[in-house]
Image (cartoon, rainbow, N blue to C red):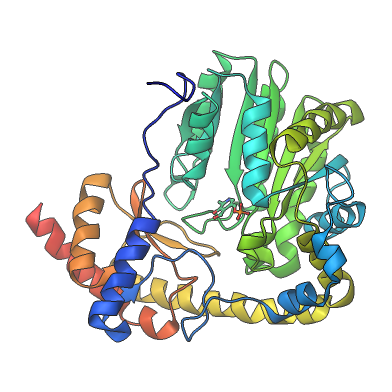
Length: 412
Ligand SMILES: Cc1ncc(COP(=O)(O)O)c(C=O)c1O
């Protein structure tokens, strides 16, 4: 019996998030909301435990004509006004490279397309060792190998490990395709400094003398940076890339607009030379046509309307939640510091991740659940989703986790 291609890995998806989300939900039904700390959910929730759906966004969507919602998009690469707005909103005038934009189904579409079209089967993709799980799955589905770089050396980016991973891969293939999830890295909440970005670009420029380079910058959480508009100023670092580098910025409306289910985002393809941008765009356009055909017209129209006619209101509304994230994460880290609970260097974003090796992590994760605390296991850590954890539930959590961790160490 063989109905799918032999080369594909047929193991079912091991979804470490949804299974635990479900256990947390059942615990709440059994023991009551008060008794349970649910730090599993990776979407933004307000203080009363409801999913945040920004009013500015959904009033705009609902005010669109039925015809707009019903229609196909104007092109396989997305509507022209959407592409223009994405460029304005994301790059904010910070990058003067040649560019083209392709609308995609969320950030997932932009990352997936890069993995499938920029690497041959059997070649290697470079990803962070602590990362959003989909990168590995995308590689697996394309028959692409994965090389991982360590993210941290102490409290800063591990440039040495990044370089070593690139050098290793350069020995066996003609190109580098690299994912950097920044700012607001999922799941650690780290953001590279301007100097770290400069060092990365300087190194890649040197590599590009012998190898073509595609740098995928996944910015899914950028609009939750604590730096506001300044979060986008680092894009100017890409102005100094060499001719043999293409940067693809994967943008997502899922978090920026709290519109996860509308499935809209974009790949911003950038390079010094027009020919380089055109080569990638030509292939991505065909991939788009062959895979999803075109993108949700209503979502694109909503994005344009919000940022053209309701920008201030939208920014004000979103800012409330950015401040809330800051309050929750600061409280958690303050208490973690007091208790001596170790976490990766968090700067901003949806998650704080506790640092530990995987043996301790597995036992600790179980022990947390015995104490009605639900979290998500990630490589070398435990993810605490401050995006969905109220201030009230955050209070006291780090201390309690540290006690449970001490108990775990005694048992293993
Ligand atoms: C790091 C990262 N990149 C990209 C995405 C893409 O999300 P979407 O496809 O909904 O835009 C996510 C979603 O969780 C993410 O965490």
